Image 1 (cartoon, rainbow, N blue to C red):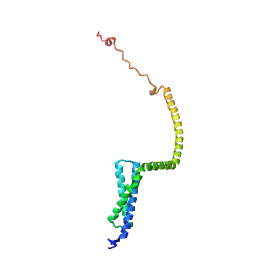
Image 2: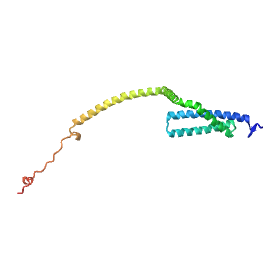
Image 3: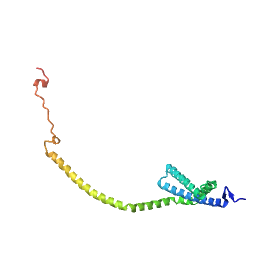
Length: 188
């Protein structure tokens, strides 16, 4: 019996297969990470499609790098089969546990991110609150002075009798004096 199959010894092929099982297990972990991110963002169908597409692209790139490092870039079906088996082992064992804990993980990550964001943004919020307070005082002063100016301007307009704004009396048009007969409608 030969120890070489396709120019590679069986011991090396076995080690590469075990590495591919580990790679598949880690790719399952990557899938769960992306799934938790997707669940925390949105659960719509378009989000599922986008995140699955991102996972497929990442898996293909990482599998190519794996092939380059382990098997000198030569594609062997048993390596793909090993990655699939490793993914399946992860998905149906540890993946089930992680998925059941995913809601707790999402809430924990949200709380940590909120806390970090509040710590990082505190100086900016403090500065903005001081600016808002300063601007608010100036706006109130400006509103009071504009109200005084508005009231004074109406008073000035009312005091000036020659302005059209203040004229409220309409001029009556006088009818020329016509003879009495015409007005009454009698001929005479």
